[in-house]
Amino acid sequence: MIISHDFGIGVVEYEERGKNNEFPLFDTCPNCKCPAHGNLHRNGYYWRYGITEVVTLRIPICRLKCLQCEVNISILPDFLIPYFQHTIHTVMKRVNQILKKKKAKGSRQLLRFHLNRYLKCINWIHSFFIGIGKICGMSGDIKKEATKYMKMILDFGESPFLRRSRGHLSKYFMAN
Ligand SMILES: [Zn+2]
Image (cartoon, rainbow, N blue to C red; front, side, top):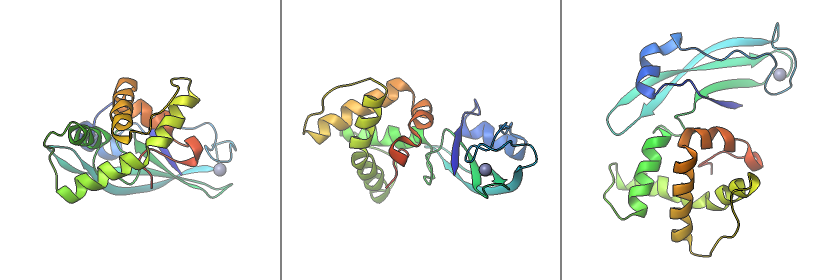
């Protein structure tokens, strides 16, 4: 399972700290809720990309394993969307530029991929905001809705949105 964690820093500082980041400690296993002591073990790191408009960094992701339920847990910094190499800020900024018909950085193929994933998630985003009592109706105009929810996510805060919405309808933001 993936835990989206707020380290309170951006990707550049996270990369500088590397394995010395302040990784969270748990009292219980996030999956089976058994006591963490004696059960939840550090299980090394894996390395992945964190890409912004200006830098491409390799960063370590801390892994844990629960001996009770055998689940593997990855502590993903909340500036990253699970399985996306670009930071959430970069992805959202580019999608927003496309929605506003402005020129966005990045290959056309990647931009189309990010935009399509975002559009595919509109109903899910809508359902998340209904769940927290934020809205009402939705029009059939996908472009209009895409712009409306873009603003709502930015107002909510990209990373807080990522953390709060994780697991909503057993999905996460931008998942297929
Ligand atoms: Zn467990």
